[in-house]
Length: 165
Image 1: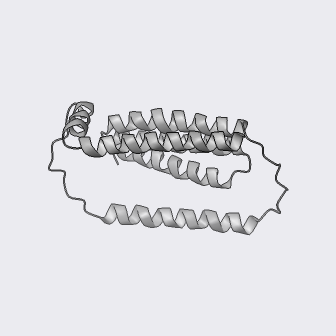
Image 2: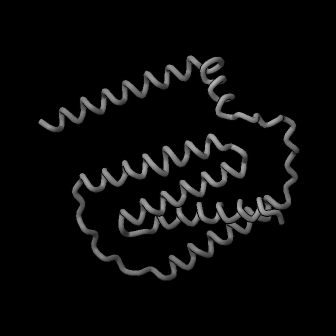
Image 3: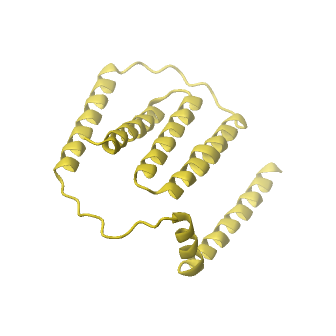
């Protein structure tokens, strides 16, 4: 077992655990912290896959901006306290057993699979390559996405002003 495999497994288990914790937490702030752990673990996986630019964007956009946006959304909105639900111990035990079983099946299948070797050379400066592709081959879709995002922003402002009256 190589160090890369160990770190991949560590990041994978952390990402899955953070996602499960986010779905099972009671308090919203704990959910956001669990989502941030998941985002950071995914960034670690991207680094292991030699996609440093994607890892940087993952940390900057998701772990940073989206998490802070969720916190502001929670702070600026009203919530009601939830009533205490009865504890479902059997549910949690069976859920944990199912997740461990699914993980074991994935682990077995991945270890038994033969993946073809990568035949393409990885670019040394990935950021430059992405920029060249966006502004040459994919310039039209890039501009269409920017127009779509601008229209969505204008629509959100109009809806927010209408509800404020």
